[in-house]
Image (cartoon, rainbow, N blue to C red; front, side, top):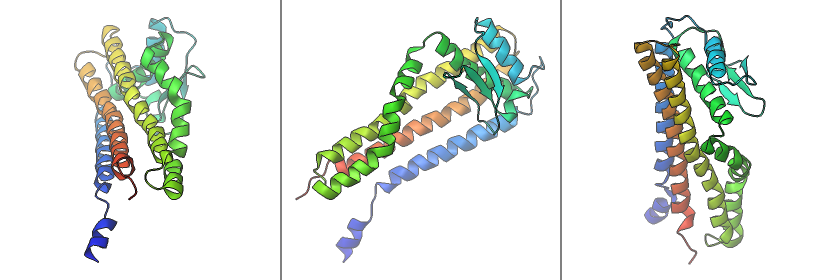
Length: 235
């Protein structure tokens, strides 16, 4: 009875819990950092939208529109529509935090304009990643049901899931590079001055932690799958 109970306990669940804790910690960090520096008005008095337009124009980019979208920190660059989309808290705000986030999204637009390789790679693997994320677990479960842990379908499912890990890893240089471009331009163009640049670095650094946490979570999930299914064979 004791042996059965022991086998029912899955110690790999701790890998999932570690991923959840990392994600929650990163989210709390970015929210608290943004809230802190959203109270600091930039000396130039530019809004996030105004700063974004100046940055884009400085790089000779005139075919990208700056738009207002609903939500909190829903900011993103859409290469399909050539739009920098800024959230409620960023578009009309004059804070150093808002300008930093707006500049980060412009960094992605600049990457797109200069054909930054990691960005192109990430876009190219998106269809495969979406398919893998959708069917990886069903394939694994179906493989176990029809062929046991040694079924080739189990390994195929794990490989499909690994595409999500690849996506997260490719995302890291894309995000870090966009932030580096943003800070450099904000400083060189004088949109932010003095210690404001340091404040923005803190905001974007906290945001970057969310991508690091997402990558770590995906790796831990993949490790769990390998431990549960990849190395086992039916007797």
